[in-house]
Amino acid sequence: MTLFRDDAVVLRTQKLGEADRIITLLTRNHGRVRAVARGVRRTKSKFGARLEPFSHVDVQLFARGAELIGRGLPMCTQTETIAPYGSAVVADYTRYTAGTAILETAERFTDHEGEPAVQQYLLVVGALRTLAAGEHAPGLVLDAFLLRSLAVNGYAASFADCAKCGISGPNRFFSVAAGGVVCGDCRVPGSVVPSPEAVALLGALLTGDWAAADTAESRHVREGSGLVAAYLHWHLERGLRSLRYVEK
Image (tube, rainbow, N blue to C red; front, top):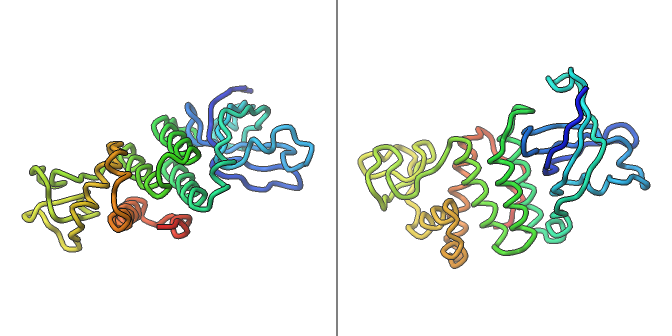
């Protein structure tokens, strides 16, 4: 039997029985974990409100040996709030839809339970903190998160040098299959010709240049979001259900 603590973000909840829930967590040290929270749907529950999506929590889990290797689910026995991002995120529709897409992406990129995913965890926490603070447009925060999540999972897109031959940019064409912008010699069927401003915006979002990203025109933001969605869809092999509700 094992008792362990970890910092986590609540990704999703599911009803279980009459008063319990299955909580899907992205933890700092244990990756994605599903746990049972007993009695959290009762009105007198001491920590039910802390285990809602978007919450950043310090959670204590109790697991038997078999549960640690995937048979059964550990029990959530204690929870303390680190940051209640949910209250600010759910109060605004654009933040909420962007935040929902962030949580779904994080779950999709952590397919195997129990595998450490520290970089993905840090990206989620940073994105939710920024969304809740309202520092940048929710759509920009989402696109930056998607690009960086792709990068830490081995699918970094190139927005300057050619993704195939490496020739210095700027390069005119963009191919999701090739991995970003490509030169004329490396152009493949299906390549598109985005505006230089949209490509520059995506490069700024990937590197964290918010001064440049925040001044982008709305038409270039929409164009860039389309490229990000197409690139994400290619590598996940199926789209995000929540992405269709994001306001562009």
